[in-house]
Length: 90
Image (cartoon, rainbow, N blue to C red):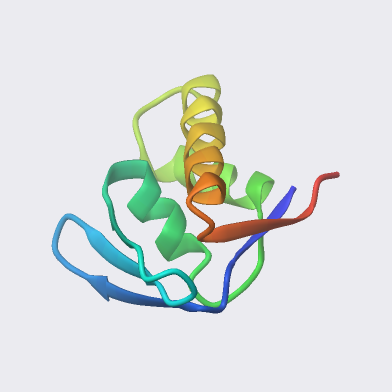
């Protein structure tokens, strides 16, 4: 699955959090943990979730299954908040 940020956002990166403003609807979001990591991963380009998972496996001390669940939940939350879009579900 390939995901990308919506274009209409502004981001401020703090030490433990990203503050994201959806410019379309004026909503602010504080992204921490996996949400922040995912947001930074797709900063400038569309990414395949398989590639994100491979990178996360080298950076975090969790099983692939745990990381996969975390990634899926992060994608769902960012999609529900209209901050990312899924471009390819294959």
